[in-house]
Length: 398
Image (tube, rainbow, N blue to C red; front, side, top):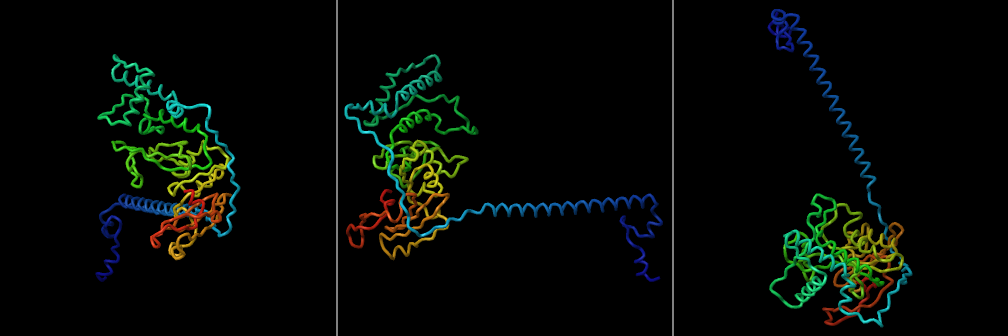
Protein backbone atom coordinates (compact mmCIF):
# COMPACT_ATOMS: atom_id res chain seq x y z
CA UNK A 1 0.00 0.00 0.00
CA UNK A 2 1.31 3.44 -0.96
CA UNK A 3 1.98 6.20 1.54
CA UNK A 4 -0.90 8.34 0.14
CA UNK A 5 -3.43 5.54 0.66
CA UNK A 6 -2.27 5.08 4.25
CA UNK A 7 -2.84 8.80 4.92
CA UNK A 8 -6.43 8.64 3.51
CA UNK A 9 -7.36 5.78 5.81
CA UNK A 10 -6.08 7.62 8.84
CA UNK A 11 -9.01 10.06 9.08
CA UNK A 12 -8.79 12.63 11.82
CA UNK A 13 -11.38 12.53 14.63
CA UNK A 14 -12.51 15.30 16.96
CA UNK A 15 -9.83 14.62 19.53
CA UNK A 16 -7.06 15.03 16.90
CA UNK A 17 -6.08 11.28 16.67
CA UNK A 18 -6.19 8.94 13.66
CA UNK A 19 -8.26 5.70 13.50
CA UNK A 20 -5.20 3.53 14.13
CA UNK A 21 -4.20 5.67 17.13
CA UNK A 22 -7.69 5.46 18.65
CA UNK A 23 -7.80 1.71 18.22
CA UNK A 24 -4.62 1.34 20.10
CA UNK A 25 -4.81 4.12 22.69
CA UNK A 26 -8.49 4.98 23.53
CA UNK A 27 -11.15 2.95 25.14
CA UNK A 28 -14.85 2.84 24.31
CA UNK A 29 -15.64 5.20 27.22
CA UNK A 30 -13.42 7.91 25.79
CA UNK A 31 -15.07 7.52 22.39
CA UNK A 32 -18.52 7.99 23.89
CA UNK A 33 -17.39 11.18 25.66
CA UNK A 34 -16.08 12.56 22.38
CA UNK A 35 -19.39 11.82 20.65
CA UNK A 36 -21.37 13.59 23.39
CA UNK A 37 -19.15 16.66 23.12
CA UNK A 38 -19.67 16.69 19.37
CA UNK A 39 -23.47 16.58 19.81
CA UNK A 40 -23.38 19.46 22.30
CA UNK A 41 -21.42 21.61 19.87
CA UNK A 42 -23.93 20.89 17.10
CA UNK A 43 -26.85 21.85 19.35
CA UNK A 44 -25.20 25.14 20.36
CA UNK A 45 -24.47 26.06 16.75
CA UNK A 46 -28.09 25.38 15.70
CA UNK A 47 -29.52 27.52 18.55
CA UNK A 48 -27.24 30.45 17.68
CA UNK A 49 -28.24 30.31 14.03
CA UNK A 50 -31.95 30.30 14.95
CA UNK A 51 -31.42 33.35 17.21
CA UNK A 52 -29.72 35.24 14.36
CA UNK A 53 -32.62 34.43 12.05
CA UNK A 54 -35.17 35.63 14.61
CA UNK A 55 -33.22 38.91 15.12
CA UNK A 56 -33.17 39.47 11.36
CA UNK A 57 -36.95 38.93 11.12
CA UNK A 58 -37.51 41.32 14.06
CA UNK A 59 -35.38 43.99 12.34
CA UNK A 60 -37.36 43.57 9.11
CA UNK A 61 -40.71 43.90 10.95
CA UNK A 62 -39.51 47.00 12.85
CA UNK A 63 -38.31 48.59 9.60
CA UNK A 64 -41.70 47.94 8.00
CA UNK A 65 -43.47 49.53 11.00
CA UNK A 66 -41.23 52.62 10.79
CA UNK A 67 -41.97 52.95 7.07
CA UNK A 68 -45.73 52.75 7.71
CA UNK A 69 -45.49 55.41 10.46
CA UNK A 70 -43.48 57.75 8.23
CA UNK A 71 -46.15 57.44 5.55
CA UNK A 72 -48.86 58.33 8.07
CA UNK A 73 -46.93 61.43 9.30
CA UNK A 74 -46.75 63.07 5.87
CA UNK A 75 -47.74 66.76 6.11
CA UNK A 76 -51.02 67.85 4.66
CA UNK A 77 -50.36 69.79 1.48
CA UNK A 78 -51.77 73.31 1.26
CA UNK A 79 -53.18 74.36 -2.11
CA UNK A 80 -52.66 78.09 -2.83
CA UNK A 81 -54.78 79.70 -5.56
CA UNK A 82 -54.83 83.10 -7.22
CA UNK A 83 -58.42 84.20 -6.89
CA UNK A 84 -60.34 87.18 -5.57
CA UNK A 85 -60.17 87.51 -1.79
CA UNK A 86 -63.61 88.36 -0.44
CA UNK A 87 -62.94 90.62 2.54
CA UNK A 88 -65.29 89.60 5.40
CA UNK A 89 -67.62 92.06 7.05
CA UNK A 90 -65.68 92.90 10.21
CA UNK A 91 -67.47 95.82 11.78
CA UNK A 92 -66.24 96.23 15.34
CA UNK A 93 -68.89 95.02 17.80
CA UNK A 94 -67.42 96.47 20.99
CA UNK A 95 -67.73 99.91 22.53
CA UNK A 96 -65.20 102.01 24.37
CA UNK A 97 -66.30 103.85 27.51
CA UNK A 98 -66.49 107.63 27.28
CA UNK A 99 -63.79 109.52 29.20
CA UNK A 100 -64.95 110.79 32.60
CA UNK A 101 -66.07 114.39 32.49
CA UNK A 102 -67.35 115.08 36.00
CA UNK A 103 -64.51 113.43 37.94
CA UNK A 104 -60.99 114.82 37.83
CA UNK A 105 -58.56 112.05 38.77
CA UNK A 106 -55.40 112.80 40.72
CA UNK A 107 -52.01 111.22 39.90
CA UNK A 108 -52.34 108.91 42.92
CA UNK A 109 -55.68 107.65 41.53
CA UNK A 110 -53.98 106.60 38.27
CA UNK A 111 -51.28 104.86 40.28
CA UNK A 112 -53.76 102.82 42.33
CA UNK A 113 -55.82 101.97 39.22
CA UNK A 114 -52.76 100.18 37.80
CA UNK A 115 -51.10 98.75 40.92
CA UNK A 116 -53.96 98.55 43.43
CA UNK A 117 -53.86 98.73 47.22
CA UNK A 118 -52.93 95.01 47.36
CA UNK A 119 -49.57 95.99 45.89
CA UNK A 120 -48.70 98.10 48.97
CA UNK A 121 -49.84 95.42 51.41
CA UNK A 122 -47.85 92.74 49.61
CA UNK A 123 -44.64 94.78 49.83
CA UNK A 124 -45.31 95.53 53.49
CA UNK A 125 -45.89 91.87 54.43
CA UNK A 126 -42.84 90.61 52.54
CA UNK A 127 -40.59 93.32 54.00
CA UNK A 128 -41.64 92.37 57.54
CA UNK A 129 -41.12 88.69 56.75
CA UNK A 130 -37.63 89.38 55.43
CA UNK A 131 -36.67 91.34 58.57
CA UNK A 132 -37.76 88.43 60.80
CA UNK A 133 -35.79 85.96 58.66
CA UNK A 134 -32.66 88.07 59.02
CA UNK A 135 -32.98 88.68 62.77
CA UNK A 136 -36.04 87.38 64.71
CA UNK A 137 -35.11 89.57 67.70
CA UNK A 138 -35.31 92.82 65.73
CA UNK A 139 -38.44 92.88 63.53
CA UNK A 140 -38.83 96.06 61.47
CA UNK A 141 -42.66 96.23 61.62
CA UNK A 142 -43.14 98.30 58.45
CA UNK A 143 -46.54 100.02 58.25
CA UNK A 144 -48.62 100.74 55.15
CA UNK A 145 -47.94 104.47 55.42
CA UNK A 146 -44.19 103.87 55.61
CA UNK A 147 -44.36 101.65 52.52
CA UNK A 148 -46.23 104.37 50.62
CA UNK A 149 -43.51 106.85 51.50
CA UNK A 150 -40.81 104.38 50.52
CA UNK A 151 -42.39 103.90 47.07
CA UNK A 152 -42.58 107.67 46.68
CA UNK A 153 -38.86 107.89 47.43
CA UNK A 154 -38.18 105.23 44.78
CA UNK A 155 -40.16 107.24 42.24
CA UNK A 156 -38.13 110.31 43.05
CA UNK A 157 -34.92 108.33 42.55
CA UNK A 158 -36.06 107.73 38.99
CA UNK A 159 -36.19 111.50 38.48
CA UNK A 160 -33.12 112.56 40.47
CA UNK A 161 -29.79 110.75 40.42
CA UNK A 162 -28.52 109.28 43.71
CA UNK A 163 -25.32 107.30 44.35
CA UNK A 164 -27.11 104.20 45.78
CA UNK A 165 -30.52 102.50 45.79
CA UNK A 166 -31.26 99.50 47.99
CA UNK A 167 -34.23 97.21 48.37
CA UNK A 168 -34.92 95.29 51.60
CA UNK A 169 -37.89 93.14 50.72
CA UNK A 170 -38.19 89.73 49.19
CA UNK A 171 -40.54 86.76 49.21
CA UNK A 172 -40.19 83.69 51.40
CA UNK A 173 -37.51 81.61 49.66
CA UNK A 174 -38.33 78.55 51.75
CA UNK A 175 -41.44 77.87 49.61
CA UNK A 176 -39.75 78.42 46.23
CA UNK A 177 -39.91 75.24 44.05
CA UNK A 178 -36.60 73.59 43.19
CA UNK A 179 -35.15 73.33 39.67
CA UNK A 180 -36.39 69.75 39.27
CA UNK A 181 -39.95 70.68 40.28
CA UNK A 182 -42.39 70.99 37.32
CA UNK A 183 -43.77 74.16 38.96
CA UNK A 184 -40.35 75.81 39.05
CA UNK A 185 -40.55 79.53 38.21
CA UNK A 186 -37.48 81.68 37.64
CA UNK A 187 -39.52 84.81 38.35
CA UNK A 188 -40.93 83.37 41.59
CA UNK A 189 -39.71 86.27 43.77
CA UNK A 190 -41.65 88.89 41.79
CA UNK A 191 -44.48 86.70 40.48
CA UNK A 192 -47.06 87.92 43.03
CA UNK A 193 -46.23 91.55 42.24
CA UNK A 194 -46.47 90.99 38.47
CA UNK A 195 -49.80 89.15 38.86
CA UNK A 196 -51.32 92.16 40.67
CA UNK A 197 -50.20 94.58 37.94
CA UNK A 198 -51.23 92.21 35.15
CA UNK A 199 -54.74 91.69 36.56
CA UNK A 200 -55.29 95.47 36.70
CA UNK A 201 -54.13 95.86 33.10
CA UNK A 202 -56.51 93.10 31.98
CA UNK A 203 -59.50 94.98 33.44
CA UNK A 204 -59.09 97.82 30.91
CA UNK A 205 -61.55 97.90 27.99
CA UNK A 206 -59.67 96.88 24.85
CA UNK A 207 -59.87 98.87 21.62
CA UNK A 208 -60.62 97.43 18.18
CA UNK A 209 -57.06 97.21 16.81
CA UNK A 210 -54.46 95.48 18.97
CA UNK A 211 -50.79 94.67 18.60
CA UNK A 212 -48.44 92.01 20.02
CA UNK A 213 -44.72 92.73 20.20
CA UNK A 214 -41.58 92.24 22.27
CA UNK A 215 -40.29 94.85 24.70
CA UNK A 216 -37.07 95.16 26.69
CA UNK A 217 -36.81 96.37 30.30
CA UNK A 218 -33.21 97.70 30.40
CA UNK A 219 -30.94 95.75 32.75
CA UNK A 220 -27.21 95.00 32.57
CA UNK A 221 -26.69 93.18 35.86
CA UNK A 222 -26.25 89.46 36.43
CA UNK A 223 -29.38 87.41 35.75
CA UNK A 224 -30.09 84.14 33.97
CA UNK A 225 -33.22 85.76 32.49
CA UNK A 226 -31.33 88.64 30.87
CA UNK A 227 -31.76 88.72 27.09
CA UNK A 228 -29.80 90.33 24.27
CA UNK A 229 -31.81 91.76 21.37
CA UNK A 230 -29.49 93.75 19.04
CA UNK A 231 -32.32 95.35 17.03
CA UNK A 232 -34.01 96.97 20.04
CA UNK A 233 -33.15 100.48 21.34
CA UNK A 234 -32.15 98.87 24.67
CA UNK A 235 -30.30 95.74 23.68
CA UNK A 236 -29.80 94.16 27.12
CA UNK A 237 -32.49 93.47 29.69
CA UNK A 238 -35.59 91.47 30.58
CA UNK A 239 -37.81 90.57 27.63
CA UNK A 240 -41.53 91.23 27.94
CA UNK A 241 -44.18 90.05 25.46
CA UNK A 242 -46.87 92.74 25.41
CA UNK A 243 -50.44 93.07 24.14
CA UNK A 244 -51.04 96.77 23.51
CA UNK A 245 -53.46 99.08 21.74
CA UNK A 246 -52.72 99.61 18.07
CA UNK A 247 -53.44 103.35 18.24
CA UNK A 248 -53.14 104.35 21.90
CA UNK A 249 -50.21 102.10 22.85
CA UNK A 250 -51.87 101.26 26.20
CA UNK A 251 -50.68 97.96 27.67
CA UNK A 252 -53.55 95.49 28.15
CA UNK A 253 -51.56 92.39 29.13
CA UNK A 254 -47.96 91.18 29.32
CA UNK A 255 -45.91 88.03 29.90
CA UNK A 256 -42.38 88.08 31.24
CA UNK A 257 -40.10 85.79 29.22
CA UNK A 258 -38.34 83.28 31.49
CA UNK A 259 -37.44 80.65 28.88
CA UNK A 260 -39.20 78.35 26.44
CA UNK A 261 -41.66 75.87 27.92
CA UNK A 262 -41.00 72.16 27.84
CA UNK A 263 -44.34 71.02 26.37
CA UNK A 264 -45.83 73.66 24.04
CA UNK A 265 -49.30 73.05 22.63
CA UNK A 266 -48.41 74.36 19.16
CA UNK A 267 -45.14 76.31 19.14
CA UNK A 268 -43.67 79.02 21.35
CA UNK A 269 -44.84 82.05 19.33
CA UNK A 270 -48.37 80.69 18.78
CA UNK A 271 -48.81 79.77 22.45
CA UNK A 272 -47.62 83.20 23.63
CA UNK A 273 -50.06 85.14 21.44
CA UNK A 274 -52.97 82.86 22.38
CA UNK A 275 -52.15 83.36 26.08
CA UNK A 276 -52.12 87.14 25.64
CA UNK A 277 -55.47 87.00 23.82
CA UNK A 278 -57.26 85.05 26.57
CA UNK A 279 -58.88 88.23 27.90
CA UNK A 280 -59.81 89.60 24.43
CA UNK A 281 -63.58 89.44 23.90
CA UNK A 282 -64.68 86.63 21.60
CA UNK A 283 -66.66 87.23 18.37
CA UNK A 284 -66.34 91.03 18.70
CA UNK A 285 -64.23 91.34 15.50
CA UNK A 286 -61.08 92.62 17.18
CA UNK A 287 -58.11 92.99 14.81
CA UNK A 288 -54.67 91.99 16.04
CA UNK A 289 -51.36 92.62 14.26
CA UNK A 290 -47.84 91.25 14.84
CA UNK A 291 -44.49 90.94 13.07
CA UNK A 292 -42.87 87.93 11.39
CA UNK A 293 -41.50 86.61 14.70
CA UNK A 294 -45.02 85.59 15.76
CA UNK A 295 -46.91 85.02 12.48
CA UNK A 296 -47.73 81.40 11.63
CA UNK A 297 -50.57 79.74 9.74
CA UNK A 298 -51.67 77.85 12.86
CA UNK A 299 -51.83 81.07 14.94
CA UNK A 300 -54.09 82.85 12.47
CA UNK A 301 -56.36 79.81 12.14
CA UNK A 302 -56.77 79.54 15.93
CA UNK A 303 -57.43 83.29 16.29
CA UNK A 304 -60.08 83.22 13.56
CA UNK A 305 -61.84 80.40 15.40
CA UNK A 306 -62.00 82.72 18.43
CA UNK A 307 -63.58 85.48 16.35
CA UNK A 308 -60.37 87.56 16.18
CA UNK A 309 -59.02 88.73 12.81
CA UNK A 310 -55.24 88.80 12.40
CA UNK A 311 -52.56 90.08 10.06
CA UNK A 312 -48.81 90.31 10.05
CA UNK A 313 -45.59 90.04 8.13
CA UNK A 314 -44.50 86.43 7.76
CA UNK A 315 -41.32 84.54 7.02
CA UNK A 316 -41.57 82.82 3.66
CA UNK A 317 -40.37 79.46 5.01
CA UNK A 318 -43.52 79.36 7.17
CA UNK A 319 -45.73 79.23 4.05
CA UNK A 320 -45.36 75.68 2.69
CA UNK A 321 -46.18 74.90 -0.96
CA UNK A 322 -46.54 78.60 -1.83
CA UNK A 323 -45.33 79.79 -5.25
CA UNK A 324 -45.35 83.56 -5.95
CA UNK A 325 -43.39 86.17 -7.88
CA UNK A 326 -39.68 86.01 -7.20
CA UNK A 327 -37.69 88.95 -5.88
CA UNK A 328 -36.14 89.48 -9.33
CA UNK A 329 -39.57 89.69 -11.00
CA UNK A 330 -40.82 92.16 -8.38
CA UNK A 331 -37.68 94.26 -8.79
CA UNK A 332 -38.27 94.54 -12.54
CA UNK A 333 -41.84 95.75 -11.94
CA UNK A 334 -40.59 98.33 -9.43
CA UNK A 335 -41.87 99.64 -6.12
CA UNK A 336 -45.49 98.86 -5.36
CA UNK A 337 -45.51 95.54 -7.27
CA UNK A 338 -47.83 93.01 -5.63
CA UNK A 339 -48.78 89.36 -5.88
CA UNK A 340 -51.07 87.24 -3.75
CA UNK A 341 -52.38 83.71 -3.20
CA UNK A 342 -55.36 82.40 -1.20
CA UNK A 343 -55.66 79.07 0.59
CA UNK A 344 -58.12 77.45 2.97
CA UNK A 345 -56.74 75.72 6.07
CA UNK A 346 -59.13 73.91 8.42
CA UNK A 347 -62.06 75.94 7.12
CA UNK A 348 -60.29 79.32 7.50
CA UNK A 349 -59.44 81.37 4.39
CA UNK A 350 -55.94 82.88 4.43
CA UNK A 351 -54.50 85.45 2.04
CA UNK A 352 -50.73 85.60 1.49
CA UNK A 353 -49.54 88.87 -0.09
CA UNK A 354 -46.11 89.79 -1.46
CA UNK A 355 -45.41 93.52 -1.79
CA UNK A 356 -42.19 95.10 -3.06
CA UNK A 357 -40.79 98.17 -1.32
CA UNK A 358 -37.03 98.48 -0.81
CA UNK A 359 -37.21 94.72 -0.42
CA UNK A 360 -39.83 91.99 -0.64
CA UNK A 361 -42.41 92.09 2.18
CA UNK A 362 -44.55 88.98 2.79
CA UNK A 363 -47.84 89.29 4.69
CA UNK A 364 -50.43 86.78 5.87
CA UNK A 365 -53.93 87.78 6.94
CA UNK A 366 -57.46 86.53 7.56
CA UNK A 367 -58.87 90.02 6.96
CA UNK A 368 -56.91 91.94 4.32
CA UNK A 369 -56.12 90.98 0.72
CA UNK A 370 -54.77 92.71 -2.39
CA UNK A 371 -58.15 94.34 -3.00
CA UNK A 372 -57.74 96.40 0.18
CA UNK A 373 -55.11 98.87 -1.06
CA UNK A 374 -54.08 102.42 -0.26
CA UNK A 375 -51.35 104.89 -1.20
CA UNK A 376 -48.19 105.44 0.82
CA UNK A 377 -45.21 107.79 0.52
CA UNK A 378 -41.66 106.46 0.26
CA UNK A 379 -38.35 108.23 -0.33
CA UNK A 380 -36.90 107.56 -3.77
CA UNK A 381 -33.11 107.74 -3.90
CA UNK A 382 -33.25 107.81 -7.71
CA UNK A 383 -35.57 110.83 -7.95
CA UNK A 384 -34.33 112.40 -4.67
CA UNK A 385 -37.90 112.99 -3.60
CA UNK A 386 -40.84 111.38 -1.76
CA UNK A 387 -42.95 109.34 -4.16
CA UNK A 388 -46.39 107.78 -3.76
CA UNK A 389 -46.72 104.00 -4.17
CA UNK A 390 -49.51 101.45 -3.89
CA UNK A 391 -49.62 99.38 -0.70
CA UNK A 392 -51.98 97.00 1.08
CA UNK A 393 -54.00 97.93 4.15
CA UNK A 394 -52.25 95.13 6.06
CA UNK A 395 -48.82 96.68 5.39
CA UNK A 396 -50.16 100.09 6.36
CA UNK A 397 -51.46 98.79 9.70
CA UNK A 398 -48.09 97.21 10.46
